[in-house]
Length: 264
Image (tube, rainbow, N blue to C red):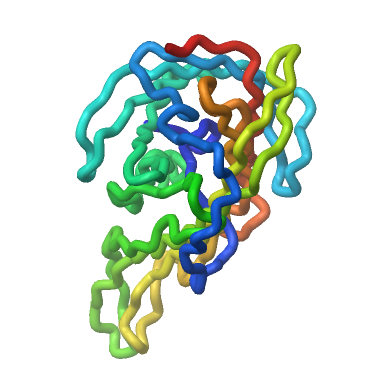
């Protein structure tokens, strides 16, 4: 399953729940089918570095990530392209799709952000991370119920308390930017997703809930993709964030820059 430190994510930061689709066309020359280059066998090799929650590179975290398109399958109503990334000790997987002028990433690719929590909290939903025809769009809005905990109300009576995850994500086109790839400078179409995840423990009105105060915990996640027709994703930044708003819960981001590729 795709880990947060690879371009899975997708997905997300800052609450813009009133966002509506804007029919402007900031990337008039963008073609997502040609930009993502999802034919089986295509691959890309990136320089990577971790970033802190302020977007600053962390020295000593440099690495190499290679990603290959391994095949296709139908997932959640879309023709999905399986990408395998070899940036960690274990290969990670993620799924992309292109449909109706938009590019999508599977939300469940983010599940490993919550390793150890066993939350089962990521539904099989697609996040629209790129749209060539609009400057702003709703990328995702979905609710998922998770685990059920036992709590005790004021009378000492056991009650069920359910966890709930609300996912909001908005997409933005950032126009064209110059990006250095190897020894060349290319014009890339930049897209950003800003997401806001809220975790709530739904308890009875008068319950003393458990475990230890988990209620309405927000997480903000930003991701930016730079795409070039005929090449693919040439640059990517998934920003660091605070998983549960505590000093021990920081998840570092990752910045990736393309150095070599083979597409057909």
